[in-house]
Structures are given as C-alpha cells and as structure tokens.
Image 1 (cartoon, rainbow, N blue to C red):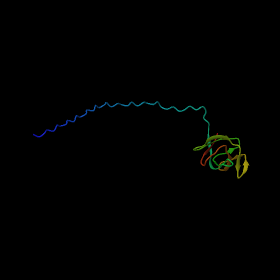
Image 2: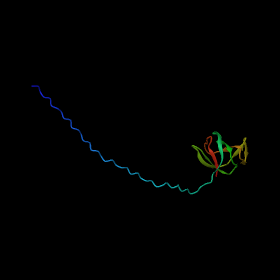
Image 3: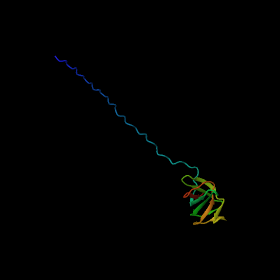
Image 4: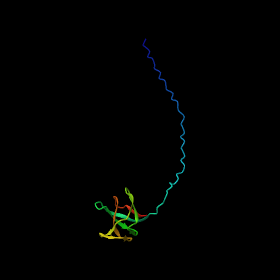
Amino acid sequence: MPLKKKRRVVKKRVVKKRPVRKVQRKVKPKAKRPVTAKKTKEKSIGVITHYFPKVRAAVVKLKGPLSIGDTVKIKGHTTDFKQNVTSIQIDRVPISSAKKGQEIGLLVDSRVRRNDAVYKI
C-alpha cells in the first residue's frame, strides 16, 4: 500500500478592515489686511539704466522732476533702500534739479541694478 501524502491546509488570514477616518478640515478665518502705521505716498520718477560701482553713481532715466534735498526710494529685485538726494549731474556738470525725460547721474548709498525703480517720497 502506497503511503498517503498529508495535505497541507493553508489557513487564510482574515484582515480586519479599519473604518475610514474622515479628516476634518480646519476652517481658517479670513486674513485681515496688515495694519500699517503710516502709508507713504510714493510716486515713480524713474528707472536705473546703469550703475558705476567705483564712484557709486547710478544713471537714472527720469519720468518726473527731481531736485537736491528730495528723498528717494530705490526698489528692485534685491534692492530696497531710502536716501536723500545729495548730488545730481548731467554730463558731469552738477545741477540742482532735473526735469522729466532727462538722464541724470545720481550718487547712491548702496549698490543698485538695472531696471530698479526710483520713487520720490
């Protein structure tokens, strides 16, 4: 008589399914506008077209008038500072004020780049 092979019984595992949790979304309150102490009125008066690093001077194409003693803000991609205008030149000749449309040399306190905007405060 041949030997009988024992059959192996493979038990199936019963996987208990967990109930799906519903994620509750937190409702954020509407963002309020930040309160600013003072709003300065800035008027665009020009764009930087060139910068001379050794003399720290910038060439500005004016869209509005500018004179010595005015406060300007220069803002660009990496630039953002305010300064008083101390020196303006046209063709290396110092002047006290410049008109719309002129290209002037302006002494600046820090590095500026092409296409930085010049605002009058």
